[in-house]
Image (spheres, rainbow, N blue to C red):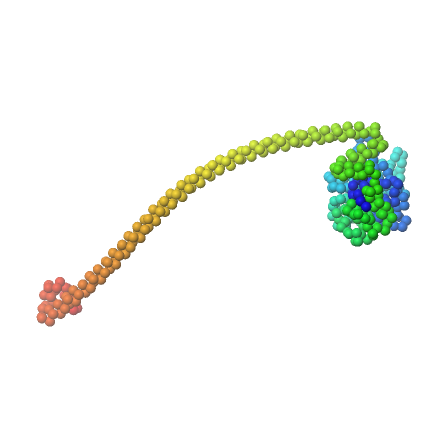
Length: 387
């Protein structure tokens, strides 16, 4: 078996929007909404996915699948591949538009029926860690749900990480099918639901017509953003139901696109001016940098010259220091010679002094007077008496 990617618009609509096999959609809705016993959906009617404007001038809307069950509940089922800007507002707009479109002239408000939105998202959207989350209008203080006619169910595929064996309930098996069918070659053995098994057969491209396969490939090639998807679906529906409106709608789209192109051209022109200004600034800065680099080069040359001068001076200082060292050595030698001579002189003086003392002693012994000895030796009377 060769399964299509169920997330693809055409494959999704072929499987869940098949008017001849509504059992698939019924089983899927019962699983998502966890309906049991008497509350389970028994029948559904596939509605035209084209939401016509309620009043002139309103926006046309195209929904993947619109349906109504046997209890008059209305369903909007969408497969959303990317988190486009305004998605939350768009889904609310679809629900409100579906709700308002039920009310016709002279019809009472109590004749309005609930709108249930199921959005299957190929991206993470909410803080809730579970892949399925339910949103309703409630009293924030008491959690009372008085307004029950609008409900939003979000299925975030990236948060579904169960294996085939771990998918142990109907809802898990449906989500496993939507997320992983394209990578499978056989229907999982755990599939025990006839409607789910039928969905797998519907997804088997071996059973598709050549036209369906070609359309499937076209869907894969086309841009998956909201505008492209709406345009493509509009073309498909208009080919079948509204050929007369196609040219008018296309002309409006072309006019809008021309306005967008004009705006974009203005933005491009502004950006080009900004780029030109920035290029001028960059050129000025480059010139400044070039000047600074020249200044730096000059300074480096000056520094090099100064370094050469310093080197020469250091060589001169080194020579002078060598000369000073030599002179200091000479002075040291001379000081040693002077010290030796001073020692010799000191010894000579000691000898002479001893000779004088001996002479004074001899003269004293021979009876010379102190005055006579003083005149002969040059010593003072005090020194002579001390001897």
